[in-house]
Length: 169
Image (cartoon, rainbow, N blue to C red):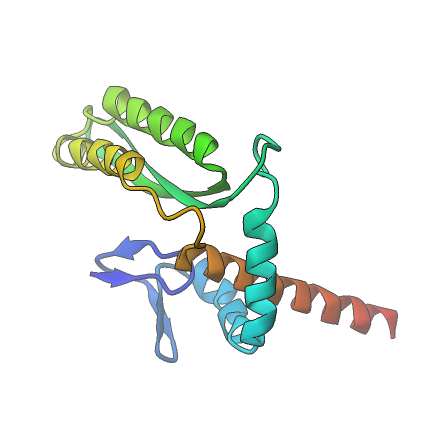
């Protein structure tokens, strides 16, 4: 099973390659350009931004941090159609708990109705949400997923700045 270099989604077939990186779709492959730019940002700049954002207020509830990336998992089904996803949230622990509980309940009630994937994925996604509630990252140390998100944000800022410079000249 391949994992998208940009969004982290696991996929069985399809996707596209760009050098040594694999992407789940063309949209992620195009956004993957940011990965190359992000790799050029000096590590000390990344650490400084990661620390500042990690200690900052929660973007969801505006409450005190620390904030990090927390994943919630969702599945819904209708007869022969089943859709499941991993949803990353940049927020505080309290907001993450609400989202994980909400997606566990959503999946529990709306996930079973598809054959065969709904029956297989619903218990998995509910269990993943419960696992996420029980095993929290150390609040003093930002996760790698959070650092990657900050690096991508810095890369996007560089791209935006360069575009503004080209427009201005």
